[in-house]
Length: 87
Image (cartoon, rainbow, N blue to C red; front, side):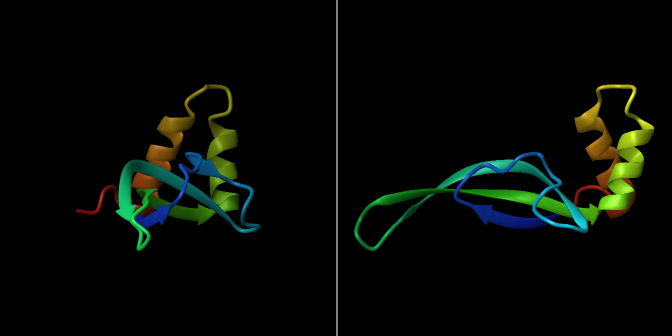
């Protein structure tokens, strides 16, 4: 299942370093602006993310290591594990 999140920066499509047990997948970044109390505009990003166990991610990544299809692998993993887009 894809969940929604926000950040002040665009995150990498695949984050396999911030957690010892999970790999985070990020997609669909949308730039937004929020006006602060002092009148300044602050930029942030809304996005969708999913997390999968590192061992599952590594297994699939190694299985397909002979081909350079990282984005496709991530899409397939998300579809298999989370059933695709949630609307």
